[in-house]
Image (cartoon, rainbow, N blue to C red; front, side):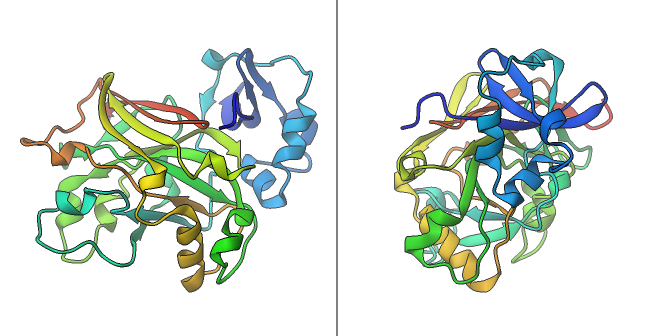
Length: 292
């Protein structure tokens, strides 16, 4: 497992959107050095220049402290955000519908506006109290392609990040085959805190994924137990759609979301949710009601 992984984040500071390398001592703003070439962190991903920008930060002093910035979602305007559902053991049983686990992955689309960055509050809308959490490992495509073979899938991943795939539960049940309206409420989920460049299979094949709410562990599993592994996901998705640099794939959550408790435990204003994965980091967000 990579120790102290390289991290590059999109953030807002001093009245402007920026990007920089995150260190234990602070954030090194790389926008002054690279801004004429790359307007955003997404542009760096699309150009295949993550390693170049990270290497250029070597030896530089931090320009900002963590408390002085607001994290943005790492890839602001991807062509696609594709989410994989029911991808860990016991998740199928949670639905209590008597149906066997599907042979192919479930999936749906999310919009960028439905996410906030690390440290920002998730928004609970007035239409429903059923805001729920789902912690997930997320991959960002760096090299596009169609019908990508499994054995080449990792060559197409540029970086890793985390997602709290926040969901308004009653709205995913408004129709028989459709979860889109429950998965896309403005600022209902989170992504970040940063991108970790993907360099080695050990960063994905068997890492711990944990979700905590107010310090209590609610979800915990390992990626080695996923029903559809990362190689398969890239291969399967690229069969029906061309993947392009900057595309985001959210790869599934373990059992233990709030909806699965009896009675359900919905997120409340003031709650703090942490999604943590080995070698990637911790995505932390609070909760507030819309309009507060």
